[in-house]
Amino acid sequence: MATIEVKDLYFGYKDEKVIDGVSFEIEKGNLVSLIGPNGSGKSTMIKLLNNLYTPWEGKIFVEGKEINSFRKKELARKIALVPQNSSINYDFTVEEIVRMGRYPHKKRFQREDEEDHEIVEKAMKDTNTYELRDKAVTEISGGELQRVIIAKALAQKPSIILLDEPTSHLDLNHQIEILNLLRKLNKEKNTTIIVAIHDINLATMYSDEIFMLSGGKIVDRGSPEKVITKRNIEFVYNLPVAVHRNKYTNSLSITPLNV
Amino acid sequence: MKINKKRYGMVLLGLSAILILSIGFFSVLGTADIRSIDVFRIVLSKIPIIKRHISIEDLPASHEAIIWTIRLPRVLLGVLVGASLSMAGAAFQGLFKNPMADPYVIGISSGAAFGATIAIVLGINISFLNISTISIFAFIGALGAVFIVINIARVSHKIPTTTLLLAGIATSQFLTAIMSLFMVMNSKDLAKIVYWTMGTLAGKGWKPLVSISIPSITSMIIMNFFVKDLNIMLTGEESAQSMGVDVEKVKIYVLVLGTFMVSMSVSISGIIGFVGLIIPHMVRIVLGADHKILLPASALVGGIFMIFADLVARTVISPMELPVGIITALFGGPFFLYLLRASKR
Image (cartoon, rainbow over all chains, first blue to last red; front, side):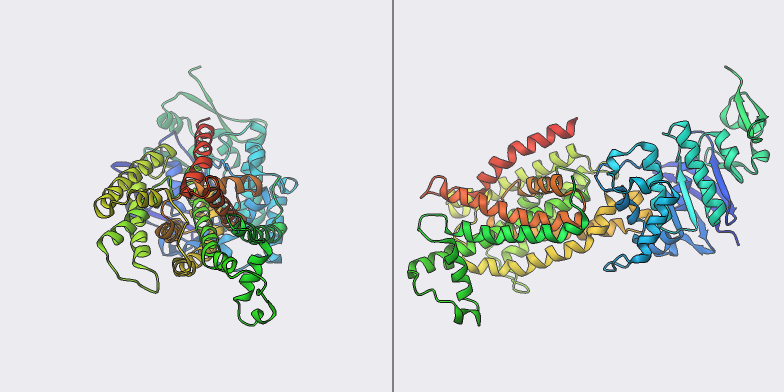
């Protein structure tokens, strides 16, 4: 059984259609990238998969159960979201933010126990944020904050993590650090990871599967070798490119040609 | 520097102690010469069982009367009003993620006063669960005002500071004008109108205090059930929703509870402005953004500030009295402008 199944999904904001008849399945333990130009529906798709929006038409199933039949906390124990823009203007400490990830596991008046404490500590160690734990989130760098938000997602103990452009505002070294972390989680814990990302070269380096979106439709999907072709890229981005195998990473790489 | 979680209990204990001492201290300052300790002796002498061990025979009966029938209910009402306004302000600022959200600024206080005025003018009497008609009408008026203001101020899903302020001020000016009109037509007593629209704690006695204390305190306690949700919502609404917080429900609960506690206060004291703005900001600067400490600490500090402001109101031009709202506005107005300036940057 697929961990996520989407059937004939349509969605838009007001009159403007953004997702235009999308169907797909995602197998448990896959690392899937959604790529495509701005406005292609990547971010909207991520939010639909987290039940933040209600589709116009179509259904989404998570582990076989329809997504809007989950209780809110129940869904948050299955799926965690790392949103695109996580600026926090309030001076919570790193540890306080990560501890918020335990919210869906607790009843309203239930206190945190030793187990929660250990999960939070482990989430911070896994993301290399343990040393920052007493710092205010207003005082750390963008890359550090992104790792803290991922630590919070880990504290939710989800089986699926959705990330919306997790690397877009980061320096190259931090981008790689975040993606290495995601791949490690994916391999070690078999966590399904779905990430909207606009850097095609990074997507091909890290993904098991790539969904290429354009105009709210999935144009092509499959292994990086299948999807990242000269024809697909030129069609979707309207840009002449060369696709070649990077001799250092052995992954496919694209180079724009009209320079 | 922020206070460690483990110290929260200590902080609240300390603030409670200061509040109790302030009650004793501020009760005696005024025209008659009475000692603070006597306030506590008088209070204890009224409590069954303990009263056998307390003798207040050495105190003149006039002192006991001043403290027990005039000062003490007034000071305790001040504590309740200050605490309600401050806690509601703290919760609204977190809820809207907007530093200017305060029951006075966003029109809740005027809505409550407007509802109360209608009940007074029309002489309606439908008391329910021991809550007076005036308080019930205040609550209805406040809910109406908050509904109008939020719907006008909302731009798609956000409530920007500027539209919130404009909608709040316009609505509250409008309601205050109608309210004044009603009162002029009905009572011809301008002093009363001024005291009601500027807020006062004077001359209320025990009865109104007792009638609002249980609903006010209950709503303040329930508000604290939502501290975790409010904290998570500070990290962004979508993020909160994805973590399992029922954002829309929490918003309604917090809004209704805050509106309720403010209405109870306003129905007795009239419109006292800016307390819900200043106090939560001060508390946040010292103790941090965590609602777990912010809400109860704001309530305690709000209580202390309110009775201090009331002390100034009744002594500064003694034997005459000022409406306490003038004092809070004297502190609050400049602070409001400072915040507006800071938020522009």
